[in-house]
Length: 309
Image (tube, rainbow, N blue to C red; front, side):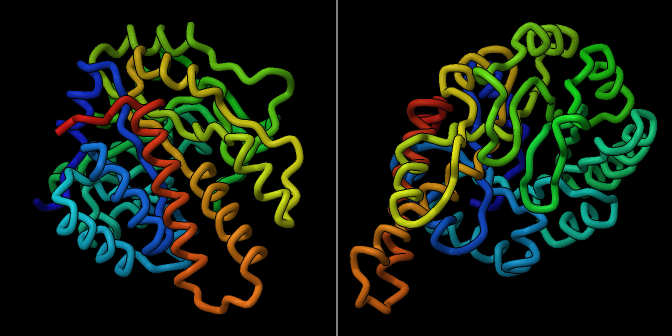
């Protein structure tokens, strides 16, 4: 099976009121852990590459690793560019064989965001590639994305409908209260479900996307801290809120921070408890196992994409 686009996956997710997991990948062990979990749970996947991943591993290495995952698993897998900040980056990834790209021009004016997104859509669609865009801005830090609370803004529902109509984009990332990174909320974490429902009603049968949707499970934060990290007060989006979002038109949920925490906790534990080991296969293997169990949990208990095939 070749790499696929998200079109059919999102159609089924929208109808079935579940979401497809979009997991950020940076190396072989992360990809293997994610794919092993999805293979066992019979779930499709979106494997996405951020600016930081492109710098660290280079797109050609990551693409070949993802192609190996497709060959090994025979799963429907989308190779997606996460937070492409220019037409040029999106074009390069399209030309390199990505099946989905995100153009994030949310830091521009509404009108300029439309113009840039439309240009990417026209190029991508001519190549059979789908496009995600963003409207509204999430607070927090993820690779090259860094937005302060003061600069964050929720998505305007009426603008969302106009944006989709004018750009022809295939999916839309919206801001309703999630945040990038191991973000500390002021007070209880919450999502603006009234806003989400209004957006979904104004753009019926259209796939919406949540970025910054890691849960930041306490057990992994505690493990990281136990073995030498310092991650005070980290908390993410409660899983019941993510489940509810998938009932209201959210078809793609991005997960990155939870993967980082799970892998880091496992590697720290392995190194501290086995100080004489100098074989990276041991601690990276432990990290891969932690990734697998984290993704299995997300697929079954949060996304609901298991038994898709």
